[in-house]
Length: 327
Image 1 (cartoon, rainbow, N blue to C red):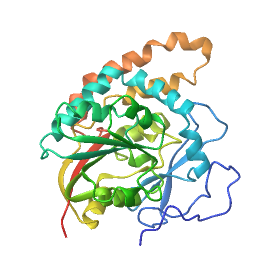
Image 2: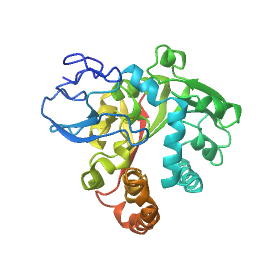
Image 3: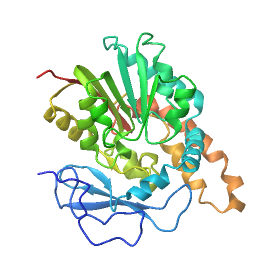
Image 4: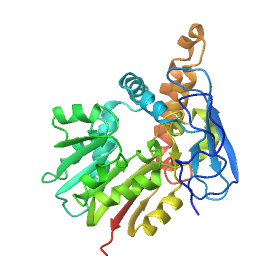
């Protein structure tokens, strides 16, 4: 039986930012684990490394040992978020991100016009801002563990802002059966317990409502090719990378019908350029100027190959649309 990722498995860690290391998979309970990578903090260069283990049975990848509550709070602090945003914008410029949000919203416009929509892990609520073009009569709310969602409320991108996770005590109960659509774009990777977060998402959905989940694909061949330089590994902030098959099975077990499985359009062509940016941050400053053109060159290769790669196992993300069935 699956075990809870909240239960410590070994001795007390020496790092207060990390929980004890566990010896079994938090998704399926298997003890057949392997270390996929060990990587330092790429932004602040804290001493030490973070490990990501993979389950040989179900394919689930998870940070082990996992960040503690103190560690999660630290890596969601505003100054760290700003550093992460600066890195992301080097790889995915703002106008490219806006175009991607619009394309995603357009594809989801096939859904019946919802009255209310909750975007979980919304950040600055750029997706709700773009989606209003295709859902003009929908009320968009946002939920995020950082203060960015409150700023999004002040700037009118969402109508209500909720701080935390869906599993934050009292949140799911307060929002129970309130929304026609709940979206999670690259959010599950940040959650301490993705199975519990999915259950909470279905709690706030109305019967017949739709859950949209987009997530990095740990089976992407770039993960093997680039190792610790693969951006979606996202250490130390990414706690779980859930394979598509696991997520699909879990949604069905929680009473959903999976309507759409898309492994093509969610692919984001940044694997090589992001790896170049991350690697460049570790280059001797005296040599960094000589290597500055590399990210732009890698980005051109990413974009050129994207139409082909998105149809292969090099695709780096997937999207699922599921309907919460009435009971």
